[in-house]
Image 1: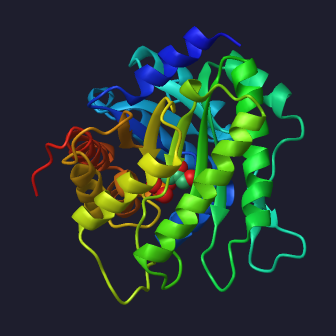
Image 2: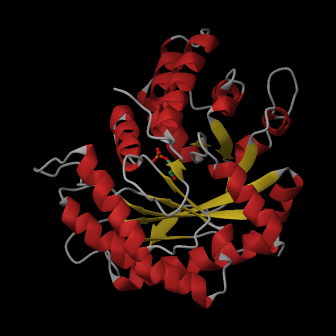
Length: 333
Ligand code: 13P
């Protein structure tokens, strides 16, 4: 493990005013989004869509890294140029989703654990050869009656720690993504409690496995009420509780913290990040790593007018720019 390489990669990924764009939807997820908009679910259509995202003009002003899916890292633009070469030429870091989705957690109804450790070292080496400098592994937790359990949190934390260790052995920066899902009617206080508990377990497992914390990026959900919660709260409240939770339960040494959008509206995701940057003395670089909240409008536009590539790219770059401003607290409604 070369700590210097890891620290430098982290710094490039989270340096203001940039954030990370997640375009690593798995085949089922990408196909579901296409289907909802009447787009054929073929490999060529997925390639075409990702080409639009990767070649968006000047997006490198706002985006430091793209997280790709296995299919995408091997694909090329219509003119034959590899996606990875296009990104590198723009100075954008190449990231790769390496988990292989979730499965039911045995004897724990309603809980999921993430798989993908088998053969992971070999796959990481392949991705490194293809130019990847960082990776992502996502674990998910549903808030419900008596869930998530500590067992589920521990099981996922061990996998996240093993994955992070394997990445760092190859000088690849691991993004660790524990996502508390927004599904359900839970309050912001319930979300706080679960997020805090989960961070405590996660960081203790990372320490047990001697993961190099300054060479890790934490990608987390915000502390936020469930989608069906009766009581809605302001961006200021979400920001305040999220930062409090991170300050009290995440490691001070973590290289950087980024957020997923998790089903928030595009505007909410931007406003919430902007509100966090009104709070003084954040202890770490803090930015976005959104998927939907940056892609939504571009995808809808392209689905309606597949020939208007530049129209869709304009939507994408506008959302990237808004979040870039939010990442330094300068977004104005
Ligand atoms: P969303 O911003 O759409 O939640 O996606 C981010 C991500 O990488 C999920 O794993």
